[in-house]
Figure 1 (cartoon, rainbow, N blue to C red):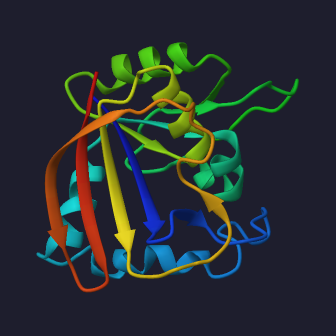
Figure 2 (figure 1 turned 90 degrees about the vertical axis):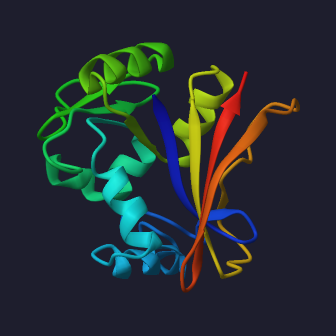
Length: 186
């Protein structure tokens, strides 16, 4: 199963304004990850974090990959990382288990094969939108953070003008975040 997993402000932003490699989450954007302070707890944030860490493959967009410092070659537990990109520069060899892939369907197929009977985790607005457009996302986990960023990059900005039906699976409320999980209905 392919699970798109993103932290988002109440006004729909996944990074603050002026994000760059030097400031990967933009101004104020790291606020979206304060809920990870509770990742070792027995509460809702700990639960969803542990679930995400049981995934056995990752798909991410090139922008997310670069802004995250290429995760130093390991997102978690050495899982294979499939990085969606428009092109691959000759000689640019990603670190660790990461490979660049230019085709969305190929990235999904390779990640699912690598994950076996476990889930595939997806990070990044661009990768998420590409997979949604291709009909390849099974579930969406949104960590809705109690903050308004006002500007930045929106999670669902570049989707086509057609709706995608979602079925709620769960809602877990923690101190400053609500974890929402939906099944994508095809």
